[in-house]
Image 1 (cartoon, rainbow, N blue to C red):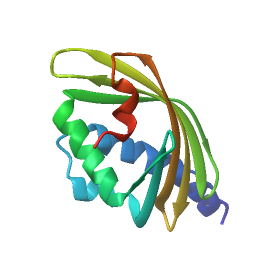
Image 2 (image 1 turned 180 degrees about the horizontal axis):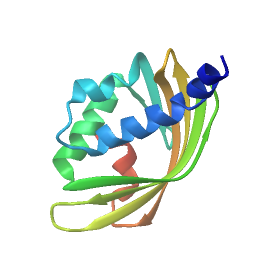
Image 3 (image 1 turned 120 degrees about the vertical axis):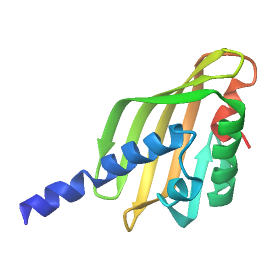
Image 4 (image 1 turned 30 degrees about the horizontal axis):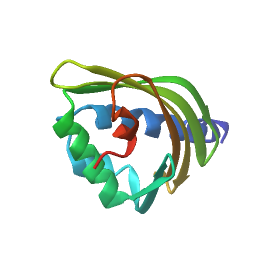
Length: 137
């Protein structure tokens, strides 16, 4: 039984890492990406709210507007159905301009899927308009 408890304790971390890997792989399938989320998924980014369709539009907008996106997790804390990260999102635009956004995020899970993400972002390195990258549509 302790093995099951140990495995379930790491489930949020695995979900977050796998979701980030797919999110930053611009060739990945969007249906597979949104399978990490519940149908009633909500994401709050600096006070702006997105639902699952908005998140999908966000992922498409990033794929259309960026050459690449990398996420480096600096801190990760997990509980059974909640997690929190501090991570850096490094974006490269087609013109070569680089932006780094620091993100502090809280995650809520239901039945092994993300149902809520609540984020605050801060541009650490970048250009005008980069503060909107976290909720770009």
